[in-house]
Image (cartoon, rainbow, N blue to C red):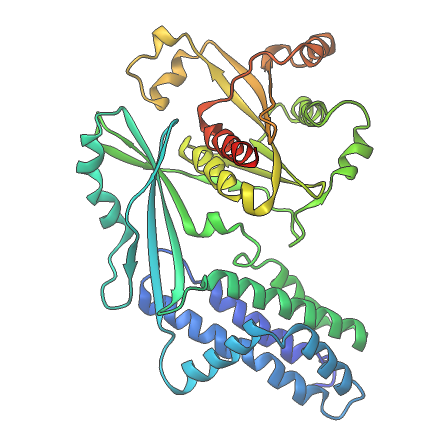
Length: 409
């Protein structure tokens, strides 16, 4: 063996191989390939500790290995990983199940169609499912129908989301290997290169909705589907929530809405544009930012439906949002789709909205043409909220806060 290779190199290479298989696992890929990628993942993931034990066998680090292994890898998910590795190697390929949920959005209601369940025995392409919706959507008699297709993967006969188990196992292995590296304290060129490659892998870093949800709009008059293109800002860490005190230190004056406004007005002045961003505040005084871009409005409707579903369980107490928007004369856009309306826009604005668990609503709108004028900004910020009304896509959040407030009386 080449003595220039570090003690961790074999384990890191197995970890890289495991993740490399998952990189190919995609919602639209056929069952044969996705099962193969999962089988390879479980096999290589389990081999990480095998090769590391061999690498450390005659060193002083075996006790450290055992302690860190028990700390990070001995848990319910770790046991399941071992079982799956043994099963796919000695008994049968991974028994994969795919479920698809079609959700239709409007400004008033959200409708989820019956869940579709597939295995390797009866799989069909998503394009076939989407196309089958054409007649139903035309019957709605609307200009356009916004909907999303969410893909969920399970081990057949089990209720645990496969993605959640995979992400947990990957993150635990990363922690284990990072602690081993600190203990061994060696500098290995090959190990360092593998770490850089691992840190660029997408599957465990990209937001789940980008991997497993597609957004669409169906234009009823012209009878065609449009699929959204999307982007998202990812913090690069599993720790997405930070203390609100961090924001208060940077912007010491004013309430949360004012701080949120000022932060994004400065961004906009610097960049001349910005991606839509939600600030979600939790009852434990932590917050997270969700920054995303989209080509059709279905995405923003879906996002606020997802936030609404989390409010009670995650103890969300405040939701703020900033986005660029067009303003219209309503008489100019009757019977026009969202795509057709754009050429009739009167102006472009930067709009801020807030609603909290006390049903307090705030909103401000800034004309983008005047946004370099500090006097203009000061006049808007100091003014009373321009309207006590939220855009239609935020209705699910308002409805959930209203429900919980009524429930607490």
